[in-house]
Structure formats: structure tokens, C-alpha cells
Image (tube, rainbow, N blue to C red; front, side):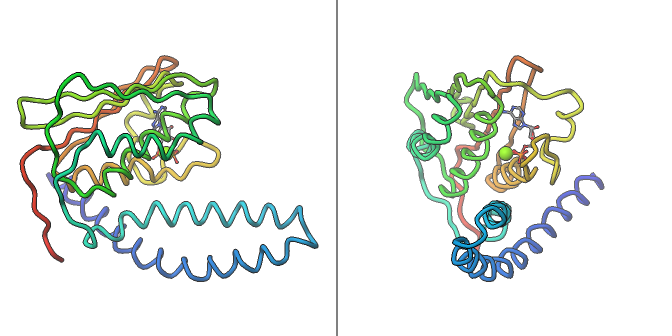
Amino acid sequence: SEEAMIRSEKLALIGQLAAGIAHDIRNPLTSLKGFVHLLKAKHTDYVDVMIEELEHINYVVNEFMTLAKPHLNYYIESKIEDLVQSVIHFLQPHALLHNVQIQMSIDQVLPPIFCIPDQIKQVLINVLKNAIESMANGGFIQITFRNHANQELVICVKDQGIGISEDGLTQLGEPFFTTKANGTGLGLMVCKRIVEDHGGNISIQSKLNEGTTVEIELPLRKRVSIES
Ligand code: ADP
Ligand code: MG
């Protein structure tokens, strides 16, 4: 449809802009961080705020970077359970801090997927971070898998968090939609973009105060990289 066209053009444009912005911001940011750390001895309070703000810019740029460099990567046969396991390991400190336990259960032999592993890891990180952040008092995150007739593999991430309002559900994945004081509203947009590049699909079900389930559906057929 026309709307979908405009939407995908917009996303492509954001990707291009991101490439430029990210590279232009990175170097001065790194050098600023160095100088701020040198300043710290004299003006601790102000400088702590400055460092926090710099970290936030750094975080936003890093989320954008994923959009900016898809052509540097290629598809390889991967074991999804290994990718999930390494992301769980990576997020363990963040989860512990929020009193959250992440459980992965596998009740079948999973077929390999063809993917760009770093990008799928990025998707898992963004989705799991949202799940962790949704549970102010801690809780469980369950990760399970479904094999759809050897056509698609579905990764389900289920949390017991605050859930998403009906209004919120319609805005998910829009750039800059966030309900968090320190949110970027970029995480899900990046996820959507990556999963769609992989020929897959993301769907989210949620009930306020009960929890959210994110389903990441990835095709199992072999995919090859297109040089650009
Ligand atoms: P951010 O996390 O920086 O806010 P995201 O794009 O990752 O940006 O998420 C956008 C919004 O979607 C969040 O602010 C939150 O309102 C909602 N959201 C996403 N995942 C969840 C979840 N698992 N539970 C509750 N709300 C969620
Ligand atoms: Mg997020």
C-alpha cells in the first residue's frame, strides 16, 4: 500500500541519516568523555550529570548504529539457542539488578536459522531489556520456541510486567515512542527493522498489569547476503 511505501521510505531515510549522524557524533563524543573525566576532580556534582548525559547520547548513537551498518554483515547458519544463551549471559547483571530471572526452555530439537547473528542478538537484547524494565518488583521472563512446519521458527519472550495500554500498542515500533523517563523509543523500531530485513515478523501481545509476550518469527529457508 501507499502507506507502507511511505513508511519503508521513511525507515530507509532514517537509516541513512543514522549512518551519518552516528559517525559524526562518535569521535567528538569519545574525546569529550575523556576531557570530562579529567575535569571530574574539581567539580564532581556537575561533572557526574555531564557524564550521565554523555552516556545517554552514547546509548542513543549505539542503537542507531545497528540501523547504519547492515551491509557490513552477512547471513550464516546459526543455532538460535546459542544466540539466546549468550544474550542471557550478557544481560545477567542488568537482570540481577532488577531482581529478574530469565529462563530459556527448549522442548524439541531446533532447526538452524540463517541470520546475521549480531543483528539477531541486538533484537534479543532490546526485547529482553524491555521485559526486564517492565518488572519494577522483579519476576520471571520465559523464553520458548515454536517450529511452524519447518517454515518458520518463533521465539517467544514472555514477561510478567506492567504490560502495555491499548493506546500504547498502536504506537509500538514508532520511532521515539517511549513511556520511560530515560527511554529512547528506538529499541523496538530497530528490532522491527532487523527482523523484517531477515524476512520475518515481530508481534506483541500485552495485557495491562499482567504482562507482555513478544513473538519474533524468523523464516527457516536459507537466505543469502546481498552486497550493497
Ligand atoms: P524504550 O525501551 O527506550 O522506551 P522501546 O522501543 O524499546 O523504547 O520500547 C518502546 C515502549 O514500548 C516502551 O517505552 C514501553 O512503553 C513499551 N514496551 C516495550 N516492551 C515492553 C514490555 N515488555 N512491557 C511493557 N512495555 C513495553
Ligand atoms: Mg527498550
